[in-house]
Image (cartoon, rainbow, N blue to C red; front, side, top):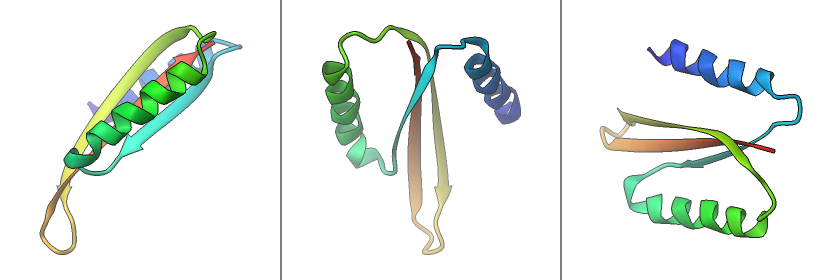
Length: 79
């Protein structure tokens, strides 16, 4: 399933000649509010853009010290 979603993102990026991509990522669940702030600040700073697609991906795992982690990535395609 991961490779199917990745190819959807790749094919979407190739579709629009004038589309641009902005990628936001954050590493731990307690920092997701920071991610929200980053995205909102970027949107406020770019009021003339038109979002044409967005994708999000959340992954979890265990680091070398045995602690779990969460990573959230949001990809915004815009013109």
